[in-house]
Length: 483
Ligand SMILES: [Zn+2]
Image (cartoon, rainbow, N blue to C red; front, side, top):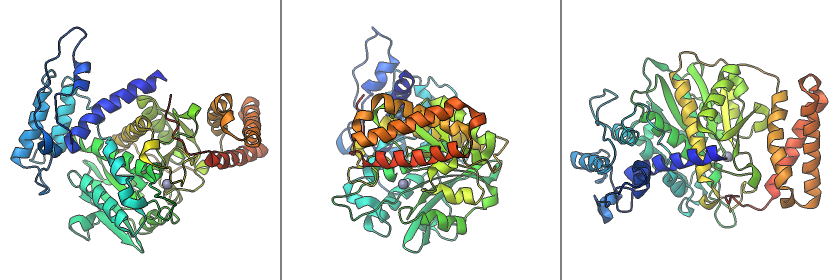
């Protein structure tokens, strides 16, 4: 898994800069972590120089909270950039041509400086502080129509305000970011596009979870982590040197846990035309490990709804990042997340998910069990795919496909090969027998080849997966984070 390790380090290094710029609470130094990468072996590193201390460092962006970055605040950001003195410092400029230098443009310039002023801006939107806040006990599960829900909405809007506009043009101020419906509030924003601005790529995750647990159900992987991914993709797109060609809608659904109600309300009351919605990318249950042996696996559900064009685009995004993300047909999402309303509305859709597992709807679904490195990579895959779909000339067309295809069996076998070889002892003996039998069946189905992939084989596949998920959910909640 060396691919993952190096990519993970890269994600952390760049991500931590974004973290410092946006939310740093410790003294900002010329980061020793960055210096290690910047200095060849044997070359002495300069002594880090503090450029701010204490409270001064807590607000490297909008320190006075007036909603804008003033001149003195801007200077502080530039000083941070200049403090990376071992690196080339690239010009900070108005790359979007809107007449002002935004925070996103400054951050992009700092990122380019880390890259020797290279043209390719590294992905940087990922910020683990989003998870810490959204999955904190203080928000009490972000259940709809509660103080915790309102705090989550406000946090999300605060993240978006600097680079996105509210999608609800009938309202103003923060209300423009809200679409209310009975007992719920969707948060909706848009990064306006360029020459294809009348076409839309929608990226969404539900932000609600629920209360009433013994203890607090923080829903860290369900679905604070999906929100983290969407925010990361959004920041990454906003930091591009040019705005994306298509407009990108950022959707944070409420009342998913009550029956996918927020996304249903949106589909019934869309704020941009469904016919002009090029694709929907859904993130639900991210940064979660089903078993120790498959911690480097994830799933991309339903890309066949956009035909080979969308499936190929998923494969390219996955290849660029390196986390094994197996494509499976839409039916394996079991219509259990917001993606299904978009599929039913004939919008090409990909649902990124780690499946329900041992921490599903458990009070142990806390930030501590989230695989942060995995979540960073999933965010980057989302960014790569969103960027491609927002920029490319061609757009996917909705396609109907057989509900289950032979490739599903091949991809699921990859997972069960690992589980049976390494993790059977986690299951009770009777359950282990069930998992082993399914693995045997799956092996036979794949060995028989596509020509023999018929109704009975499909039945075995669907019932076997459903049964295996039930057994996984019964395992003790453990993030399986240890190597
Ligand atoms: Zn969920």
